[in-house]
Image (cartoon, rainbow, N blue to C red):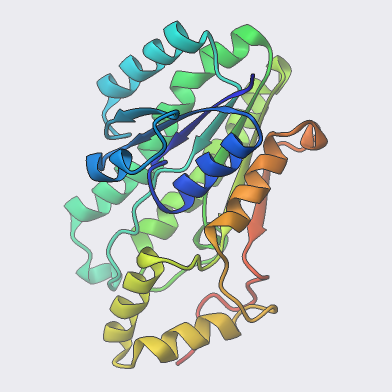
Length: 252
């Protein structure tokens, strides 16, 4: 049976990822910082409460996974935080660093922990949850955008270093995903631009050729494909699932 670890797997995109892999017959292990969200997840998923930016806790996690499962087939490095929605000169340094700690350092520690197991077994798939913010510059989103650009560099380096061991690495770049996080971003951007959340939302939709936001299940479907044998020669790629973003900063 295939084994998958999903970081930040107790809600949002992470939950959709875990649910989709479980439906495909995978053994699922999720980690999350929210104990309340973990309690709501299926009891037949392995669950661990921890912060992905905690080096010691992450090291212990992978020792436990290796002892209990004997390896890992798929890593979904999904944990992320939105960061502040402010002009660069108004960004708080500690908050900026916290965003990078979760989005970038958390992904780095996840990959660092899983690679020895995957190299030993001679196969594996690593899937990063990125963002179209890692493809364009996004006003008011400097910490988030910077972290996602960095994720792409990390992903491509992993693909180069681990490819000879049968390990593939790819990143999924979602556009605007329906849910609480994007609603919060829209509200904060509306405040920055002195307009209404509905106008910002419609402007983002108009910036896609399909005129739509996406759902977490769309990301999960792509992740399942990237982990499958059907994608056995797909590595080092950034795949946008975003309704085709043409204008990431619509003028309002």
